[in-house]
Amino acid sequence: MSTLIRGGTVVNATGAVAADVLVRGEKIAALVAPGFEVQADTVIDATGKYVIPGGIDGHTHMEMPFGGTSSADTFETGTVAAAWGGTTTIIDFAVQAKGTSLLSTLDKWHAKADGNCAVDYGFHMIVSDVNDSSLKEMESCIDAGVNTFKMFMAYPGVFYATDGEILRAMQKARETGATVMMHAENGIAIDQLVAQALANGRTDPVQHGLTRPPELEGEATSRAIALAKVTGSPLYIVHLSASHALDAVTKARDTGQNVFAETCPQYLFLSLEDLAKPDFEGAKYVASPPLRPKEHQTELWRGLRTNDLSLVSTDHCPFCFKDQKELGRGDFSKIPNGMPGVEHRMDLLHQGVVRGELSLERWVEISSTTPARMFGLYPRKGVIAPGADADVVVYDPSAEQTLSAATHHMNVDYSAYEGMELTGRVDTVLSRGAVVVDGSGFHGGAGHGKFLGRDLNQYLI
Ligand code: URP
Ligand code: ZN
Ligand code: ZN
Image (cartoon, rainbow, N blue to C red; front, side, top):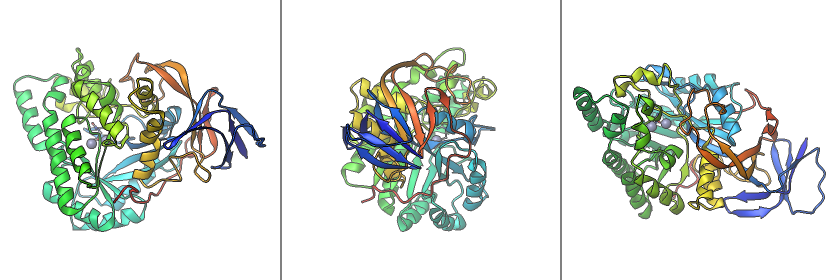
């Protein structure tokens, strides 16, 4: 079975070129100069459109247990929504519960995802119980294709790891070539601020933001970087939201340390003002780190341009407003932390191109190529090139759309971007050569997506 994607502009991180893309089976077979005759079973007309590598969302939480409930997208609904938005690979987090092993955790997450995903997927591992045995098990996880380990400086009593525990895990990462991913917020200080706010009757969602000040993200980020320096471990800061944290990352990168960071669309487009929306609506925007005052956005866009921020993931962790976010009415600390977004990352980042914040190539780089290299999937993913998986998005840069819960495909009853008008929209999506989305609808299905064992981070120096 072959498909020719004809007449478009192929955009890779390295440049844009007019070319046709020939797909054979699951792979890209060739890029063909316009005008050369090529036979194919099917032709997709991409005239006036971009042809880009499928998006890779390196940070999602499907059906993740959190705060007494579970994120609302299953692996099936979440990956279908991802496909609609031009994301053809997700990397989700397996979550070690205290007292359990990493390998049994991995088995559990395989059981959740296997046969249920509409696009390809991999796993990171959340390490919440550092001991001799789990440190040893990190080696087996790496052999099983999971070589990125998330730790938390936040959430004492739940996921929190002490500096000593982080140091030990980083030593193991240094030994094995793994990367430690860090949720960098000073959870010990934050918990005091949260208790004080509640004791003073400050219970609204905006308090979530006010009790997690950007300085405490900056401090934790600096501390994580210091621990990585001492141990020689690669470090990847997840969901960076504050200029204070970006300053620390920039400094570390300028000294040549293996420190990387992602930010998320919510920190680029939403702000503390959304968290302050009245009548508990701010609960829709509760995630950690919290949305920041608008001035941080300028710095984040700058960081994306200068590569101090390497890429953008969603931290997709949806909880319905009704019954889930509502658990925190009268006590903001009980609002489940997380926001939906897996469907809109490619479109939102395209607004960066429309607004002149990013070049076209940088858009592709931060949404696909860099995630592929950072998470050991390149050149199988993240590039339109012969031999790569035929994960291809035909993107219409001039289509207009309005985001809304009424039309999105994520299994969540609100949109964080309700009413936002965007320029650009996904037209056709191929996942390993199969058309899963086109103008006539969704043609993929649960079970098409395959588990991706990943190589080590390809940026390590
Ligand atoms: O609020 C968030 N970010 N929820 C998901 C879990 C995490 O910390 O990434
Ligand atoms: Zn986190
Ligand atoms: Zn997350």
